[in-house]
Amino acid sequence: YYIEPLDTIVAMTYENETLRIEDIFGEAPLEEVVDALIKDETKEVILGFTPKDAEGYTAKLLHEDDTTLFINNREIKEQFSQQKLRFPSLSHA
Image 1 (cartoon, rainbow, N blue to C red):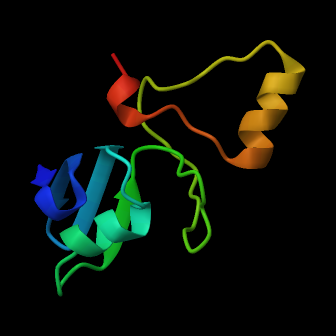
Image 2: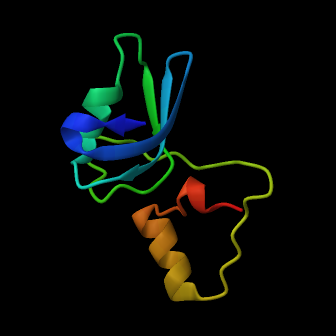
């Protein structure tokens, strides 16, 4: 979807009361993008990526079939667990 006032493209779905933003292509701040897409009945916003600033968001452990990431490097493993990082959902093949 293209949000003209923000000159931003958003890969997203809206199902029931959940807005799922897979990725954002543009320079608009996340909060402005969410505000432009949210509906009155929206109860949950799920991000398919790790935001630059996660303040105001709750991280949840992702459980999906066939999405296990094996990391053999302790330093990288700690970065993922401490910073609650994830690969963007659009990068899954």
